[in-house]
Image 1 (tube, rainbow, N blue to C red):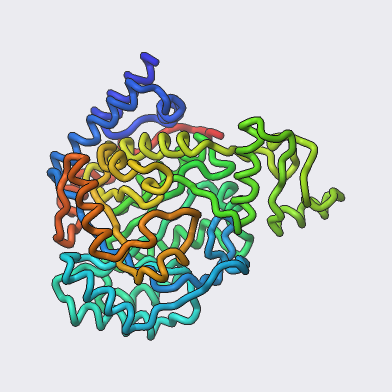
Image 2: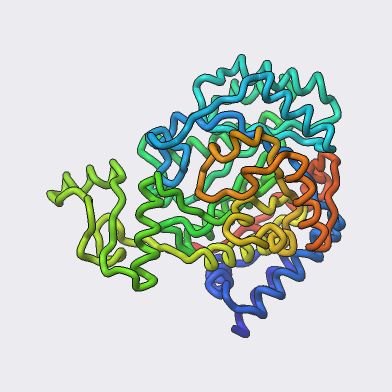
Length: 427
């Protein structure tokens, strides 16, 4: 514990550690003294650079159609139980109008990768918002596109783009996504966005199956290379209409001693690999614990508390590594624990994203289960969130809240000394 505390103090002094030091620090996520040390310093830094301000973004979830089939996502293409919807251009603009009247000065248009919303449609929507609200920031979060598409959106008036890399480890990425998706494409999109001139946000989930300390180190290293303006992380939360959600829940039951069998997920690529190896399809219940199954080796299921604690620890570490960054305290944190968003702010976050979508569609945009604030009107949602932020000791501000680029340049000067070092990949 003493050595881990020394490493925390070293990170506070220089904003980076060597790879083996990160491994030890991340492994000590339950140590209360280290948690407090990191949290206090993260809060001091966010107060130094951003004061007690918490920037409010108005989230508009305008489509839950998606062409992708990510194993963890509730709006994946093959989820036949999902009730699909699309907002019209007029409905999106109504959300913006309502939000503007409530004081929102950033609109975040988020949706699945929906082929219906062509470049022309997105450009038209962005232009309408920019024309009606010239003093507002426009953020898009609509997935992987071509560089030319990103350029068109930027020329239409978009300021920011959010695209989580999810995991910076190729093997781990392949465990979470089907073969027609690749980490290389995701990274290229992020660098294209930077080159075009967007304020770029990336990030990853915490507590996903097959995630290790080594994969988290790769996430931190990739973020150092990317130098994003915004970093969004949140705990993985299961959805029972996904193969990974079913697998995760069953693993948690086994871990809790509620059963001695483990139900594997029928993920197509894993079933194919089993068939090619001459094994039986992974249906029903296996007679082995999770770690013993061929396709489940390395499948780690963490409790909700563990996922929350690790997310909070990583938020503090990210604030120390990226003092200039805009870090959201995510809805997922508030879903996994009633006080999660408040704890996220205390751990170093300085952005919240209340929902401006029509109340009748919020529950349908279900990336994970039991998402909070699905039944509230926008005004009620904002008021409740403002109270929550105030309880945590901060204050909501309505400014667009752009990243402080002069601070970013100060912390992101090219330097080998500021990179996570180490010769060998850690697993």
